[in-house]
Amino acid sequence: MTLMRRYATDTAPWRVCLTLLFLGAGLFFSACSRTDPQVALEASAHELQSALEEKDARRVLSLLSEDFATAAPENGREWARRTMLLMFTRYQNIRVMVLSSESRIDAQMPDRASSTAKVALIGAEGLIPDNARQFQVRMGWVKDGKDWKLTRLEWE
Image (cartoon, rainbow, N blue to C red; front, side, top):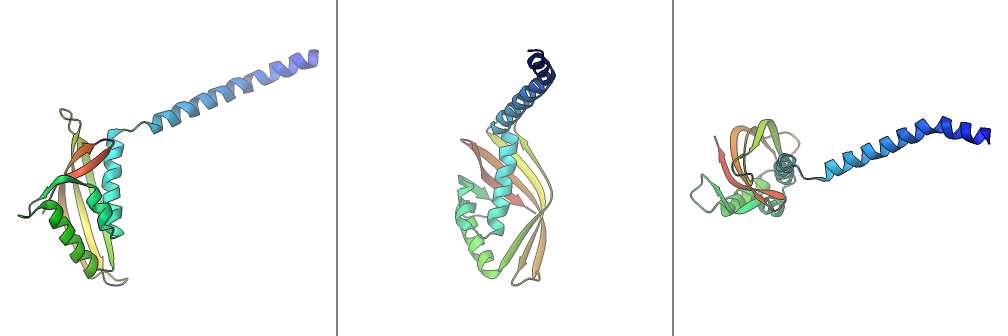
């Protein structure tokens, strides 16, 4: 009996530690499973970058809002489709390097956000880049359910 009490007493701190560890892990994973709008916004921007680099026009178009607009005089979605067709057929490899970026969710309208980024767009017919241009890009985003959709794109 004394051995059982001693065993129970000796292992009690381990039980507390394990309980706290599991509780902490549970809280951590439940916090991570909540969708932070800023994290979701940045994930959408990264998804757009990946889709362009993988030359996946369908995926890029799925990230654009129905009323997507650019400085081009034509329909924004049509402009995006044509531009991707031109770029994807001209260059075997496309790389979008984000040199700096900042995204903000509008405090007054939390379903709206904006991003600015300095990007280098690099195209290559083979392994060696043939064309590289740097742009200052401004993007407008609108929240669509859990996802963010690109609604406006301007560049210089």
